[in-house]
Length: 129
Picture 1 (cartoon, rainbow, N blue to C red):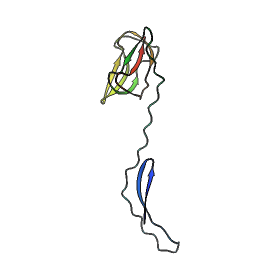
Picture 2 (picture 1 turned 60 degrees about the vertical axis):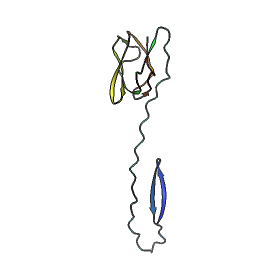
Picture 3 (picture 1 turned 180 degrees about the vertical axis):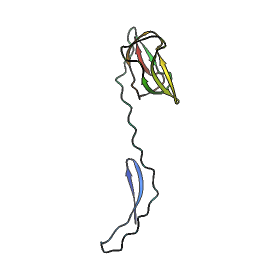
Picture 4 (picture 1 turned 135 degrees about the vertical axis):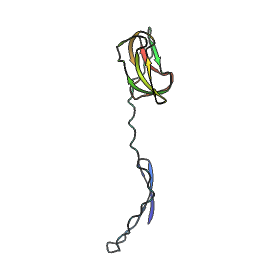
């Protein structure tokens, strides 16, 4: 028996291989199972890439993330008129879904994030004008 290390998708497995000399030799012994490593998990789908971030211009302001988290859903849409307190998006942080509201009446000029994207605290989420 010879031992080899085999790497599959970044996970290393130790395997034992028996060398068979000829076809007339005795039947090979039943293979011994080496300690089995857990099956590799499929790679997680990458979060969708958002369009380049836009800074607030004259007469506009940014709604920023109050904490780090993951954008679950964009509730409003670009170009939509919103009132103060109206929900713009849902941000998941610490296993809680937080509604991020508009802080003033205005129009959603640009979303700087996409659903599924992770954000840092104080990162610009929405430009309101």
